[in-house]
Length: 253
Ligand code: PEP
Image (tube, rainbow, N blue to C red; front, side, top):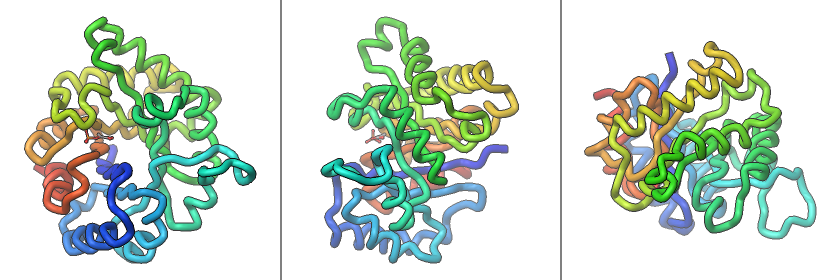
């Protein structure tokens, strides 16, 4: 039985003081997290250290939104896996569509980051998803297949079992237009079958596949009730305690 993972991607929102306020608000609701649910907060880099201190001893896990694949060196503006671990991160989002579209991240780069994250003991959340134009051309499965195979190149079966995949249709991110539960379930099933073909069905059944794209308290239960949807990667709705917890609690509806 896969447990559900709800992760909040804060993106480039919340300065240090605002982060403290949001985290303190979330901490007041920690006892409401259902036993089989993992909740991960992914604030910007500048808030990770303070988040680490505030979340100590709480049921929340900490994640970052990106990392570099090298250990250290002349990589201005970048942050390594070891640095993330030093501020308490156990998760890292990789290959988000905004990184792919706005910062030119390729499948090859995502693969290098993924292998480094796994080697460092971080749990990667690898994002895949098609654009609206690709969905309309009916090439969603081909696009996902190329992204997934590229990201998982040379990743062992043991490692893929502890990798989280986030299916995030680009047309649903920040648009208020979510995939229907059936549309999302179809792609999640496709992803699981693909992992089954690449590795084994036993491993495919272990992989947590999150849905992301305009998840809100009022659509979360429908999405999370589908058999292959094992959680959510939440953008806009994670910036307010009430809406984030509306989604966390939808896991048990
Ligand atoms: C995201 O950025 O990963 C995301 C899913 O955003 P939103 O929930 O705002 O669509």
